[in-house]
Length: 276
Ligand SMILES: Cc1cc2nc3c(=O)[nH]c(=O)nc-3n(C[C@H](O)[C@H](O)[C@H](O)COP(=O)(O)O)c2cc1C
Figure (cartoon, rainbow, N blue to C red):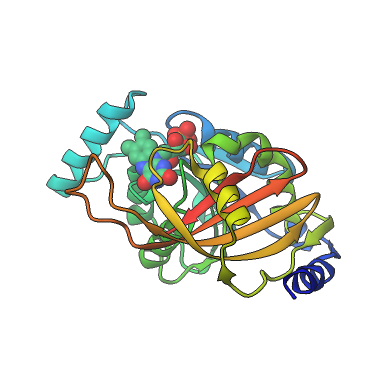
């Protein structure tokens, strides 16, 4: 029964769609991004090159230095004080653009503070915002919600996010994303729905563990799983429960989360994002 469902899902997924990319011709597009350690910068450049858009980096007056711990501490301090970092004035005239691709690293589950400053200072009413981000484990969905709250009169479309550990997969994924959303012309593969959720089998549990075991921030147990076909492999959607941590038992478990895992050919399973 499970096999039949998977075959049906595969068939449903094998749709080759074509986008004509008309948006790219009509609309003025700006790629605007903040990046501390250049991951998001790579995505921003890939998007700008493919779309043929203008690009600008958001710069902080008093930059966060490259040290992870120092950045965490400064952010926590700024949060406690309720302040956001001052950013340098942009060279781009936002008013002349219809679409803003807005890029950022996910910090504490949301847009990095320099992007929060930008969103607070600007009015993007009537414009389309396309969020894109890089992260350790996830945060596209939660950060998109915060962008929606900050810009109530803008149209925000579902964006693109990639783990810092999977940047080599980014150019192909960006290409697919831009075609799917009509920003560039060309054929793309429309993936089907996931199969209904079922309890994980021992084999699926093994895949889950293999995909997540080298990521220290994840300590979850897979409960349910759905699957769908992707080119050369399978994508799994695991519903997992955060487990109490041995060393930080004062930290409450984060509860239920969705963890997406891909298995392509004979390569090691890898998780692509966590949605909390
Ligand atoms: C202060 C700070 C907070 C972070 N918070 C998160 C987080 O909540 N979730 C996550 O998945 N990654 C988190 N990360 C990892 C970054 O999102 C990731 O390394 C990102 O790719 C960095 O992008 P950049 O090179 O463009 O600066 C955090 C990193 C820093 C420095």
